[in-house]
Length: 356
Ligand SMILES: [Zn+2]
Image (cartoon, rainbow, N blue to C red; front, side):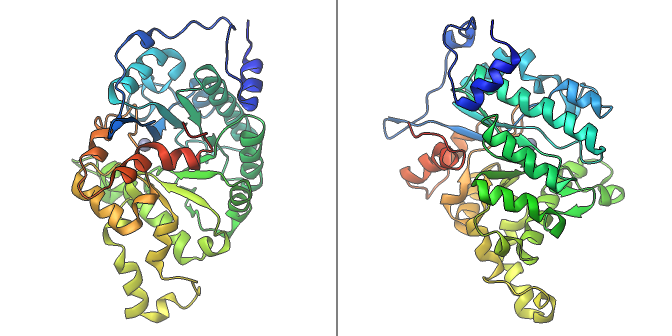
């Protein structure tokens, strides 16, 4: 009988589980949508997929229930359901990450939470290696620890990068305190997925109908995070970073030229940090998920940042986008090669997966 440790060890070694007692998932008998472009099968990879570990949540005093702690985030309990939903959507593989909830925790608690999550992610990936890869959780409030957790996650557990929030206890991702973490991510050459945790500072203004704390608050945090990484020179310090932003990068790509024009209109406001490039040029070295809902929004995103910078994202199991593949297939102006890249080719490269 394979133990949890065996799973973790095997995940690190990239070992497939054959003859270890795991039954073939029943979903395999169901209908799996196979995505084709010009008659050729394409492997689709979802860069924006969530999961949770109740044991880790409990350490932070949180419980599974509704909302952001939905029960179907726990893949162990709902593996069949998760795979069925992926099959129906035509998603071959998910790159799993856990939304940050531990940035306010003391070091020992954060360490334990991360250990549970990263080992749990590795175990899950080892169990169904053809359907899941994962991004490590890191305790970003302790950047030295976060750097070590990322390195251990990648080297010992076979994880493919890191997932982080859009800020850390009110501090920006561009804060110099985080340089050790960015340095490690650059050195390892692995992607860092930025997923917002909201803008608590605007709580008062985001009340009322419309769920504005999410509707606006989440993309706004990503917009702020990316803008600071650009304007504070973090991307000049660490030009090899592979950053992927959730929700199409929030509002930044929709109104990107303003970031260039602030420096033209009020040069003194851009004088404190001398950038190597125009602000909008940095967007072409960042990556973005395609979770922007309409063909027109995706067309614009591709025009602004380059189709080579886009990856498929669903937010699964949150039902924001139930037709992510069709969305990419139906966006006008993309070539077949560009569609193949957005559907999975670019994500495979970022995640260090072998091409099929
Ligand atoms: Zn999400």
